[in-house]
Length: 262
Length: 287
Image 1 (tube, rainbow over the protein chains, first blue to last red):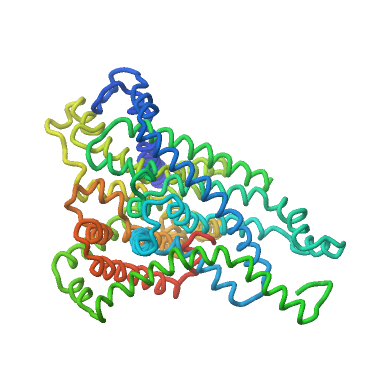
Image 2 (image 1 turned 30 degrees about the vertical axis):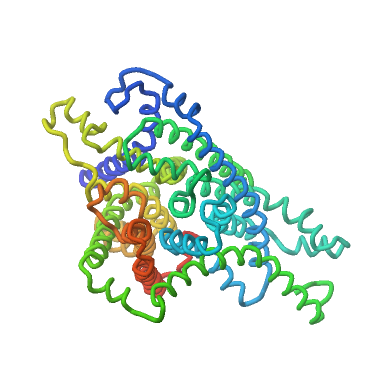
């Protein structure tokens, strides 16, 4: 009996340590961002919002923030309908080729992102899309599509296509029956997919490193450059805001999914 | 296909409609990932005529060899550490009441939704010479000189495991969930000790999850860029950094492409081999 509980205690202790390891870096940024010290000191000397002021008053950071938000919004607006249409067709069609299409749409998750980034850079260099807003949006649409497709396909799994048939047999056309019958039932997974595409675009760094430039540099690219040079606590402030935004969005996405399940 | 009209013409229209619906998404993927990767492959063998010079360099020159070897070593280390850390957590999440397992899994995926860049910054803040951990240890007189925890392979591995751990825990947990609890009870009722039932019954049944998690972590680690670049201190040159340096610093597009192609082929080969044993959907986390 003693040995069981010893093993059990070891399991609890190890798991607790691993969870601390997972959470600590996420939690450490906020106190740094509110510290008055120029350099990291532990414990932080005093509370201050100077790094937030520095972020909100710096035109370069503000321009980068505008780029990030614009790119993320356009990404959602384009990737969501494309992804929903594709997921719908993949789940409804009996064509053999749809399996191949499905796998192809998941390619962005399989190909190492550094390879995608360099490849896009070469193609963009040929067609003049480097350092442009459309170029950045298109790349992020590609990276966000798998999230929409996966989320919507999961939503469609519990949807009975016979319902749409009924609506159509009652005289609704295809499009109307989709919007009136199907879409309301998969709404939460569509929204969740869109939110994940937004977060993916907001956090995307590697492709932006290669293809963005000039005035169209997103936050992550500027942060990366700043991090290579020196550790500026302004980045802690930006990181805290980005993390808070991500968590709020994920919470929004998952509570929606939860409601559907319940 | 349709209830109202089973005629062939109707079915053909249905097929075209479905193909039209997937075409925008498919076009984006083809133009922005298939075409660019194809371009890389072409560029790696063609420069004013066909040449294998780039591949000769990748396979014979020391700097490339060392980088590939180092990348595989680090990926292997990261995968093993992630397995050792992830298995107990997944096991615990699987063996506690529902509310607790939801809490544990939420804590596991929480960092997943924080930008990789933000987490690299956090690890810099924690591990650097004047960082939180060194200051903490000196505050309590554990050490007199700050430890070199970052700008080396150690920092890279610590931060990379942190980022990839969720990809290990989730497939492990999903597999453990499917192991029937009464199998363990059967083992116990037949007189086997808990450790014996664990090693003879539970562990073998969880191996598909181990394989899925290890594959995902290993493959993702092979292509890691941001973390080694920021935490490796320039000495830990992983393959991804080789690609980016050849593009940004040396304008060696052919060499960069060849390195990228070798990396991609390695990744696809791993996926192919693993798919002989378990369904790839499992690896990609779609169950």
